[in-house]
Amino acid sequence: MIKPTNYPEIFSLHGKTAVITGSSGLLGRKHSLALLELGATVVLTDIDYDGLKKARAELESVDGYQKVRVLKMNVASEKSVTETASIISNDIGRVDILINNAAINPTSSVIQSNKSPTRLENFDLAQWDKELSVGLTGAFLCSKVFGSRMAEDGGGGVILNIASDLSVIAPDQRLYHKEGVQNNLQPVKPVTYSVIKAGLVGLTRYLASYWLDEGVRANALSPGGVYTGQDDKFVEKLTSLIPMGRMARENEYVGAVQFLCSDASAYMTGQNIVIDGGRSIW
Image 1 (cartoon, helix red, strand yellow):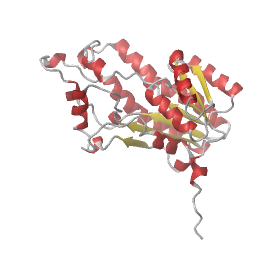
Image 2 (cartoon, helix red, strand yellow):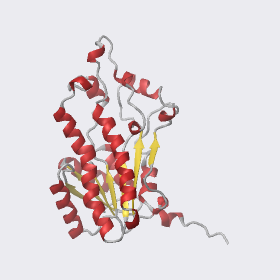
Image 3 (cartoon, rainbow, N blue to C red):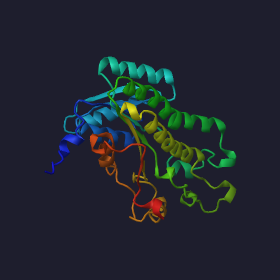
Image 4 (cartoon, rainbow, N blue to C red):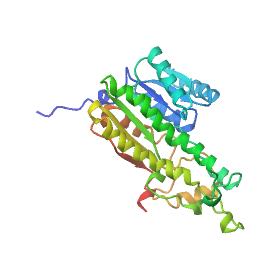
């Protein structure tokens, strides 16, 4: 006899606690909402505490969600991450889900403004170190601290690394081209972003095999660009590269996050799920 799947049950996160880094940003809030909808207690973390409080207020206004905590945490500091993990352990309990979402991502308007030298020849080492410390080292430190605790107590858990479609394709620098500017002065997407996002996929595969026997699963989600009112010319250029002919809407990664953080994906680990409107197939 075929036994039907209990879909609400395999997606349920009731009794689970999730930590999300970089929670004050747009996608951080959306990831948080995705897990709250499934019943999880969500701990929002960020170095921007004012932004965290705004994010919590926004989330708690949706259907009266009250399972939201906020903690200031610097993902680039092992001391800060370890102290935060201890606070959560003492005040809430074990962490079942970690979403490594923190990143420094210059917007298209910032890149095109030429306010910071993004070209490889002029890219400052200090800026390289800063961006990698948040986007890649931060994910390593959080995985090390929270993942170790998941593995040590035998309860397992889920680590989800938020990468990008630029983890599998190169940035198309024509998107940032400015008329009347010499080629050697043209703004570009900085090298750090591609390196970090590709590195997150490598970290994901490493973690998936490292804690396999302890029940800790690790996957990556690589989203495409989200429409947030960017310059019309930039949007036109980008959408011409996407088979679906548009950028993503703010809520179009919610289902993927819910799938990857719940038992609905119990047989999946070490994978990079690319959701980019088909951009990477061209």
